[in-house]
Amino acid sequence: MKNVRLQLFVSFLLCACFLHAQQAKYIFFFIGDGMGLNQIQMTELYGAELQGNIGITSLLFTQFPMATIATTYSATNGVTDSAASGTALATGVKTRNGCIGVMKDKVTPLKSIAVRAREAGCKVGVASSVAVNHATPAAFYAHNENRKNYNAIGHDLVAAGFDFYGGADFWGVTPQDSIGLYDLARSNGYTITRGYKEFQKKARTSDRMILFQKIAVSKIDSRTTPYAIDRQKTDLTLSEITRAGIKVLTKDPKKGFFFMIEGGSIDWACHSNDAATVIHEVQDLDRAIGVAYEFYQQHPDETLIVVTADHETGGLGLGTGSYELNLSVLSNQKISEREFSKVLGNLRKKCNGYVSWDIVKNSLSENFGFWKKIRLTLQQEERLKIAYESSFINSASLVESEYQKDETIAAEAKKIINEIALVDWISKGHSASFVPVFALGAGAENFQSRTDNAEIPRKIAEIGGYGLED
Image 1: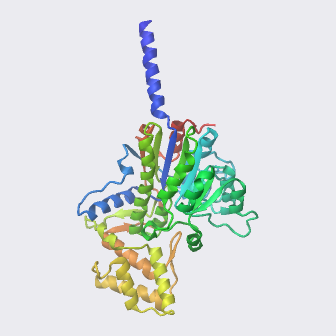
Image 2: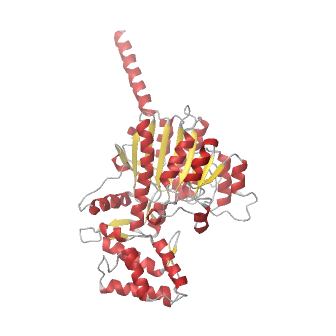
Image 3: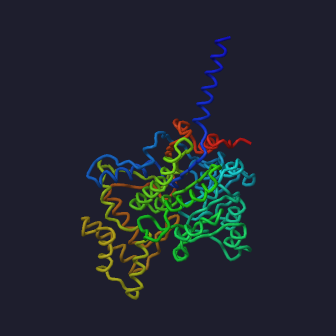
């Protein structure tokens, strides 16, 4: 009898410990779009090189106690797109490339972890550094066979009724949309704010909020916030979006929350193979995670932070055969390839169409450090001159990547500084490489062994107390 009682008592203690370890009231789910293992490794190696060291300078999230890797294939492709991978991360079910929140039959809707959290009485937030109706954030609230049906996805955003949305803006909203998404959101109780200062003014009196960048910035590009490397002081940041979301989601202290935050611009920079810009974007995501970490320090027993990626983009390679790296040279690149294309366009307007090689050469020196801080070979200089002639003399077509169209000479300058840094890219698309998974806080011990992207939300939902099983 004593042995039975002892066994029951031990079982009770084990169950109590297990439940205590599992339950999380507050959950942050960070997704670095396109952020593979080498994107993180490059950022940390770069940090060490800037200090004159060979090694790494750790990011905050790479120091989380639990770390593993995940596979990312979709239901129909060995190499996933963001719609399918976003759906896997949101619902725990794999679908075909291009689909948002539906099974691979393109019809059957899937319920996301965010919806499950809301049904369990939690506050819910979805945010990104790109548009809120883009693929990854959309996977947490929308159901559509085509990720490019931005109007319909925007309507799903409002219908989902989450407490907070943050990002660049709505993307691809056309005049054919019978009910404007901004008006629809307002009529459903959302306060739309432009910029962090306006958010702060209205946050006290608003329970459901949408935070977008300022209209002037959206008029330039509503699809994304400016790259971190190009950012002006008044530009909206992912850290500000994260901080704003926490403020909205914690208004009722009795309720927990689920908050997904995407570093979407990492992917965009990887698609254009812009290594320096990628580094700044990974660092920017790390700063946003730092905001969540501040919250975790105040609620360490109730908070879970999970960081992963939807896929790797570009097939980034570190080292090109010489058994060394020269990543610190990337510090001489002051703006992204995209922004340098704008600089060249402004020069064209300023000079009434004719821009001399000397003017372009000076701009290359200012923005990439060429000649002034970086010694070029004769071959590299000749390549830049040929690209200059393509851009300004022969009116060559722009160089395209997934989300950008850039000047020929901007693309060539970026390519040359990558070569000098001794990094290379396989493609301008996605790869099937492993992605990282890092975890900290309540239930983090569940993220120790190799996993698959569809398993991640199932583990998170279990830890949050709202399992994904029907």
